Image (tube, rainbow, N blue to C red; front, side, top):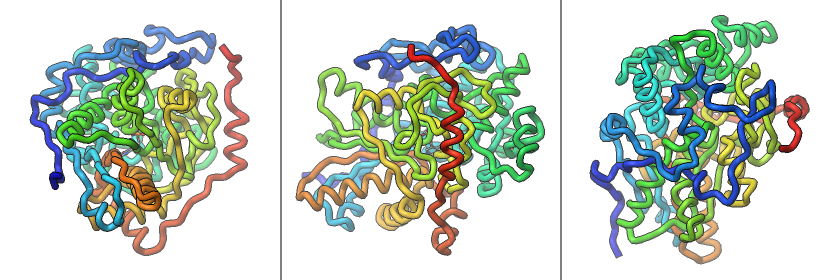
Length: 455
Ligand SMILES: Cc1ncc(COP(=O)(O)O)c(C=O)c1O
């Protein structure tokens, strides 16, 4: 019996390849469709938005994709990220469960997002691109791409969802420190933004709208590409360094998770920790229970429809089959800005349909309560998004106590909340409420889903 708290790997153990779960799935995910022809999109359709190396990763069915050495060199600054055993939290909960968390807040911008921002900037730079437009919810993705852009000499333009822009001025300042330009979305700089402002001059914005603005800028300029911080296959692929490292760290601990938990906005940090374990299971290894946790105010996996939908509000993107609340749905302005997306990654949605993962939805006050409990035990202050995974882990640990069984629970602590202190201030002041989405708006957004005949 050891009392190890922190399982660390040296830099030589940074994965050399990303893991592509498509190779191990019992059936492939449905194809992405061109909205005009309803035919599967080809690499040429995506070329205005992404460099070809990323497009090839997007459609790849190879089990492993080599990580370029310049990307591994940057990863060295914070990877391998530590795996912690939450021994003090276990004691406080008086649970027989073993709680482990992989901590992604050690990256310079403070979350898992640089795991994909760095390779995306690298491949763009390699193909001669000088500018990238993107969106950001919480600001974690925007600051990660700003960081990566600074390293690879690319100008970054970030459309930041208005409600987060107002809630998180320090994230904005961080992006500017890295040299990026950041505007509130909807903005008056694009047709998509202007259309939204015409409907409501004080629009709080959404990730779907900010994506439309960034795609519009990229599609209309030869020198500019687009980058997305979640949802797409290549983004999920890049995040699998998290789970691969965790597997090696569990070997150090002579243990293996029974349950793996991640919060889900677009699905990338969840996929990052979960896919390597699910892949091992699909190849005949140990079965793990996998739980996706999402906000009750934007519940795509638990309340959305599994259907073809646009990735953005202005309908500039291809159609992807995913759990969706409808691309025109604007979630309430709750504090986990990174989880305010109407859809779920097609790969994560497909796993849900295959019965390989479970999903549950939590209200934000309970998530903050769990985050504060965690911070008081472990010292690390989680991002509001990560609080969803913290609550999931605490609930499972308490279930172990009730049932008198010890299970190993792993969750992804995908980012710190040092730029989210206003949310914690509001929570302590009793001003943080559980916001409900508008059922009529949801029904309308779902009624507006594009009609695509079953393939
Ligand atoms: C800290 C953090 N966690 C989670 C998310 C949600 O994204 P994803 O589901 O792709 O991990 C975000 C998105 O901005 C984030 O900033």
